[in-house]
Amino acid sequence: MRKLASLRTAWLVAALIAGVLLVDGGYRLSTYVDPQVAYYDLGIKAYQAGDMAKAVRYFDMSIASYKAAQRDTWMHRFINPRPSLELAAMANFQKGKALLQAKQAEQAVEAFKESLRLNPGDLRGGLSADQALRLHEEAMVVKYDLELLFKSRPDLAAGQGKGQGQGQQGQGQGQQQGKQAPGQNPGSLPGKGRPDDI
Figure (tube, rainbow, N blue to C red):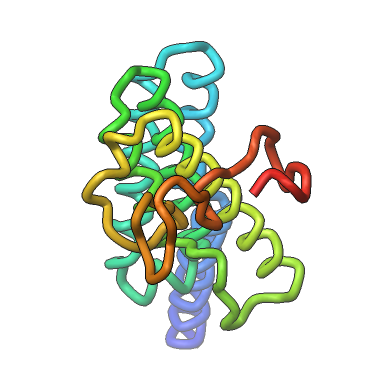
């Protein structure tokens, strides 16, 4: 009889400990804040407030959180949300915009290019049609802004080589001097612009 009572007590204690651990784990999951998202949001707020140095710092922290999450253990990846490649690309884009506002165009070019390395606009694997379209449109905005930057600062485009949508005089076979190549002039309007802009 005594043995049965002590066994029942041991099971009750084990169940109590398991219950406390489950409640603690549930509370942690319900209050979990993804640092990648949190730093990105802080960067946007700093950008909107006009504090470009702080915005760049927060976007860098968001990007660092994304990179750190790539090296997480399987248990952490199982429990917590996956790091967002889309948000990392957007953080680089927003960082580039903040660097432009801070008159650091060379670093802005690198941030735009890193955004396009993460999201070149043609990602397909495992994405819905809507997600793929959204990523494509986001990449096109980055390419457009990069082309505008190269247009306003041709010195930044010099030596960039191929890729990222920038065009340069004299590039390609049969191109005549002074003629505009496709992709060289992004147009005067945001978005798609007018059909005759390019």
